[in-house]
Image (cartoon, rainbow, N blue to C red; front, side, top):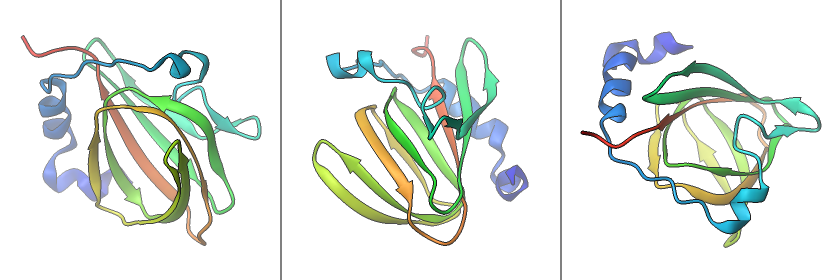
Length: 136
């Protein structure tokens, strides 16, 4: 799966992201919620830890059809879609359905909470990269 992004150099991307200034300010509600690695679906983990060091944490999250991710918060992070899917995502603002396509990416300044379920017919796989410090 990671071979799909080797042309743009995952190591290069991660190096750049490690230098991105990020300050995680969690809302009070987030203190009572799991982070994406701790959160799962019906007692099963959906994210696995790929890398964890002083600069970043990298997760790979996999959502087969009908599987989701219970309510959790996110620190600031960059995400990359390895395999697309159709997700129903609920936040404090409401519920949306998103068609997520392989190769898409995003930056998030953090999320107080959200939850989602794969309502499509394909397994979704995403990378989540969380920078841990400010650039010096």
